[in-house]
Length: 135
Ligand SMILES: [Fe+2]
Ligand SMILES: [Fe+2]
Image (cartoon, rainbow, N blue to C red; front, side, top):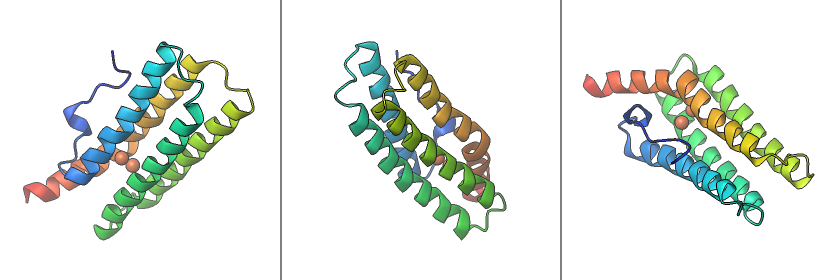
């Protein structure tokens, strides 16, 4: 079973953003699957680098959308994006330094990494964008 199941609420209705959310979920699910199969060792750093690059691209895109709409919660959302990128970098160092040795904990952190940010910051943005689309 996938760690993060796609839900319709993850969809913004803006195709590029939806594709980016699917990509992030897919990356996390692929890692989870490899951890379950105990096949993660050779790919962990590559995976975290790919997650960092995909997330940075997605966050920049969301931030452009927010700025274009004069979104009032921009600063808080942007700050949380920075925190998420820092967390992926921290996970990479922890793994390389041998501190990160419980992979189940890492996948739980990645579940929270996506889902808590989504619930706290992306969902309110989505509701606003949906209200624009309906106008
Ligand atoms: Fe997002
Ligand atoms: Fe976001």
